[in-house]
Image 1 (spheres, rainbow, N blue to C red):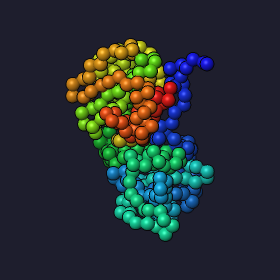
Image 2 (cartoon, rainbow, N blue to C red):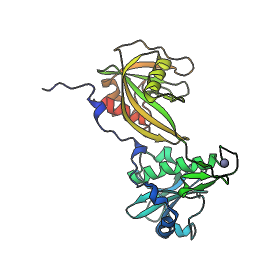
Image 3 (tube, helix red, strand yellow):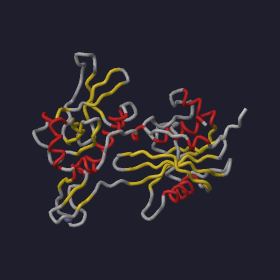
Length: 313
Ligand SMILES: [Zn+2]
């Protein structure tokens, strides 16, 4: 029998739901002479100010309602964002109102409205990536109508991937890095914690925003110390997931600490923190993430994927 390495899970690839995008996002695709040519065959998704879109669903399958570009207009609208190209088709998003959808279509699909939080984990790879980009970029346009340099109104440029004001100041979509870390003991135990605002028994890994001038690794060490009073030695990168609620990038790490280190939850931020075993967590995961006194974070979160990867061992 070969000995199982309790840290082997860190080297295995894992795929957060919103990191599965497969569309080509090359900058050259956004050149105006090209998008003018490809617009007539493009597909367009209408996204409302809350990030909701139309879709049809049957059983566990959800497909977004992509409109033919002719339904939008003969030319690319100023506020449209080119999400990417896939197998010869350009996919765009435009801000607008999605119709209130209800009821069954002829072939038994239900027409529904919803967003990334509901569908991020069940959409296919292509649509999960496209909807994530659409919510992130359209949300940025919605919140950023003015130039941060001079205060004048700016307009979208580069097929929606930047904004320019009359003075020529260019601005790009902002993303805030946040770290999320699974604190473990190098063997079979890990730290989970809960915030006061969460549903009863929900526990997850620790997380926090990177501050200006701080490295990701330093953020991991600082946040773990702040939230549960524990010092970590080894910090290893696991993977990342865009989290456009409204503009974060969750960067996942494994952080090792002393086995059985006492936990000191930070008042107001962490209601309770605890050591859990792999066995305990496996049982909960096998029951769809619901245990008697331990509920896992939702499937769409990178936290869930990190916990699953660790529990698999
Ligand atoms: Zn300006």
